[in-house]
Image (cartoon, rainbow, N blue to C red; front, side):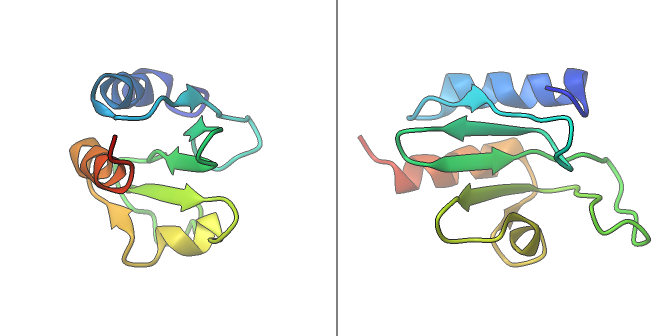
Length: 100
C-alpha cells in the first residue's frame, strides 16, 4: 500500500481474510489509488484514496471499485453505479461473483 498505507492495509487485510479468492497488493506510485489484484481472474479492487470527496480533483475517490481489466475503464468505473461504499460490500460482491 502506497497512497494510504495505514488505512488501506486494514482494508487489504479484511479482503485477504474474507474473500473467496486470493488478492495481492498491486499498488503503483503512479496510480491514483492503491489496488489489489487477482491474476487468475484478472480482477482488481481499487481502494479509496480519500476520506472526503474533492470535486476539484477528478482522481479523488472515496469509494471502492471492482475492475475486470479486459472490460472496464477504471476511472469511468469510479463514477458509475458499480462502486462500493465500504470493504464489506466489495467482498460480498466478489464472493457472489466467484463462488467456489
